[in-house]
Image (tube, rainbow, N blue to C red; front, side, top):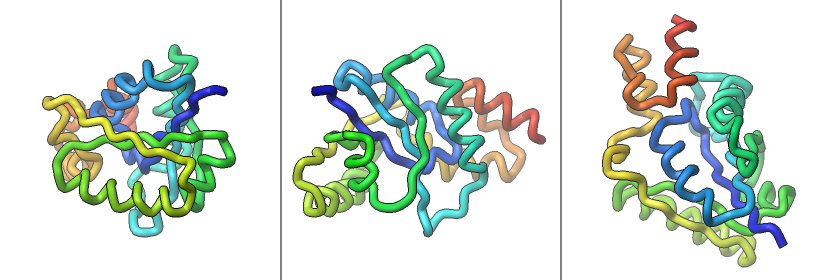
Length: 158
């Protein structure tokens, strides 16, 4: 049986921290589905299609990675794609507390789905999409936090 993992998030925009977690998770799974989920609390800066294009471009040479979009419960999407694992990146202890609460709820909804937590490389600890969006809104240089394809497309859009 294939070991399929879902890496859900808003990826608004996808950062070098996200890319780091995905690349380091590659040896652990047969396939990683990087899925853009709807979050009713967040108003995205970039369209879903733009975010999906970025993910596809960044990982175009990696056959084990698929970009997707979903609505609804993450565990339901896991069932739909045959994923038994959820991947989450952790920067700080506060991230763990938040993510563990979600993992516990997911485990209650479907005990067959296990959540894996990977800490990010220390150099990406301060990289958060929220901070990157704020830098972009204020005309700062966010390229230090972004994959090249994302940084280039954001600069073109200005």
